[in-house]
Length: 302
Image (cartoon, rainbow, N blue to C red; front, side, top):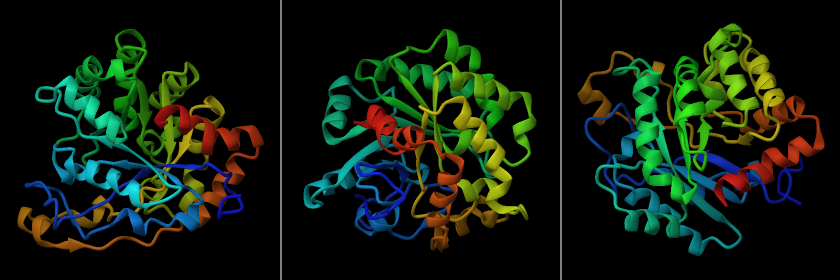
């Protein structure tokens, strides 16, 4: 039995970050500067997860070295499995280097395309080109490509996903596909649901408070979004906390480039326990619950 009675044994956490700026300085320029967060500090007992996917953060630059360093810590963490999603520069990385990353535990690439009001917001055409470029390198490894973008970008990529993407690539949408409260009524969200039904996209049920922040109804405002995604693909959903919960983009609006470099940000207190309890309400079916925590992420990141 897992340490969280709601969570099945063998559960996966598919979206966290780890930061060690002393050993691996952050990229410049960057949108924020978080304090350190070690994998050993992850709340294993709260989530009940011992299989953890570490996602390379945008501020960590393009080298996979920080991620690989964290993955190596698995050697000193009995009973824990660590996997990773890396930032990949397809113009520089060789097949041999990709094989080395795979051996280290990397199981995919990550594209962070949500601007949060800082910088240019990428559209589906630009993101789609990046996906296809990555796919030419990664398909032989049957890796995932995790993407954080908004729901409009997902919809505009539908034709590419259906007709051009190598089927060996596993597309994973971060944070409910970047769908904000009220956007469940958009035609773009319906297109996203169709991609899920067609088994072309997996979705991380993660980062909830990034979406419902500022809405009086709190997590209830994303309930129709989550329930629609779960109904569309009960075997296409996975769990993520987005630990250690870096600050929201809205808190950085108006900051100068110098402030973004020099203001060391702490982390937010997020009710991960309450989120897991809400997930159980959204997913009452036992088979879907087990798939969500164990079987589906195992297929993606084993």
